[in-house]
Each structure stands twice: as structure tokens, then as C-alpha cells.
Length: 203
Image (cartoon, rainbow, N blue to C red; front, side, top):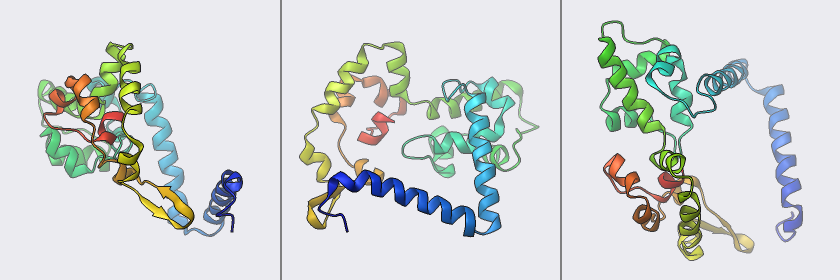
């Protein structure tokens, strides 16, 4: 046990990851291996199609409807399919068709289809990321605001293991308040119409 030897943790973690990957490749069921290979291809194709997630315009989604699952999983926290439908108001059948058949609805008018795809892209593209793109100088302001969140606030959302090791899961970090960031980036809350959590703001 290296609980009291933090200088060895990085090496231990890397070794653990390697051991898991080796186990997975050798012993995981064939279906899991095939799924992993296919998912890797899907992610690669989505990154190429969207210019590394920087271009999610309707025309891009038109050409690559099968990219939607990867795009949902790229947000932080990941967007469940039903949550995507609920937040955008788009048809659940449309989302399922894009994800499962990699096709678009055939009976939806072109203008209406673009409107629905625009809603999906707008939600996935972080409002914060867009503001930082429009106003790069605000990046430092956000950085300062994040640094001013007390460590006790973040630690308080996590858990403590033996030896005093603190661990915060993404879901727990999402509970931390983001009022200071919202105050300087009102567009974030205006865009989604709701108070966002800490994890939503830095996604």
C-alpha cells in the first residue's frame, strides 16, 4: 500500500490503467471489444466532422447525424437523451433516429429540420465557451472567479478517505455553487434560462 507515499501515486495510477487495458483487451467479451472499437471510430469521425467540436452547425449535423451520441457525451456532465429532448424541445423520435439509424427525419420540412438541429447544436455548444470565443479577454476574468471559490466549498462537496485523501466526483463537483461566474457571465444563465451549476459553467 502506498497510501502514505503520494510521490508514488502517479506511477501507481498509470500502472493500474495499463493493467486494466491489458485485462480488457485479453478477457473482455467479444461484444465489448467490438463496441469499444466502434465507439473509438465514432469519436474520431465526430471530431473530424466538427473540427474538434468547434463546428456544430445544422449543415454539419445534416451530414453527420450519427455524431449526436458522441456530442451528447462530450458535455460535462454528459447529456442524457431524454434531457437533450427536454431542454431543446426537439422530437424524441428525431433524436432516436439520428442516434440509432444515423439518419434524419424524412418528412420534416428543410427549414424546420434546420431549426431543430440548431437547437441541438446551441445546447451542446457551451454558452460559456461561445462567450469566451466572442470575448477572449473574459477568459482571465473567469479564471480569477474560479480561483476565488473557497477550497472548503469544493472539498465540502466531496468525500474523505483514510489518510485524509479528498476525492470529488464530477457529479459532486456539480453541486458547488457558480454564483460568482454567473455574475460576470450573465449570458450563460440567460441562454439556458436557469441557474447553472459549477460544472455547467466550466464545461
